[in-house]
Image (cartoon, rainbow, N blue to C red):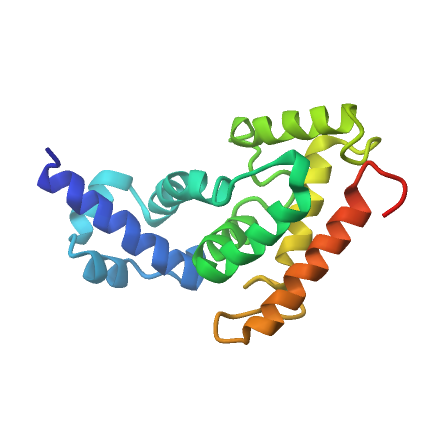
Length: 194
């Protein structure tokens, strides 16, 4: 049975995730989070100590969704890139939340530096795919994973050049998916020819 306190805490985390995704840590307003969640500020501070503490709790809460938002298959990196593209369309708030964490908390290095174990299975799978010649060898598995994510984010909500939206035509999305498949397959395949 879920208690009222647990439901209130869940509402608070969800409202805070939306606020932080939209405005970042500095721009988020505790008053808006409290109003949206129906949880008073005193309770919010009692649970999390500060707005920064609340962001940390939100990021930790969302981290599994961020890292595991789509199924990963080291033997199908082109498909993984396409699934990431689709996830950015479906849940742009996740990529924005990650970006705010990058901008305001972890400006350099591995954004998962304190949570590296969450991605370790992916790195290990890439290493196995490299060993059997399916995936490009000679590149660190974590860096290869980062390349796939970067390629998939080419049209994401945090792109510096173009952000895709669900309102665009399916033909536009199909063209981008096909481009991702080709680029990832040709660039990261273990084969020397296409």
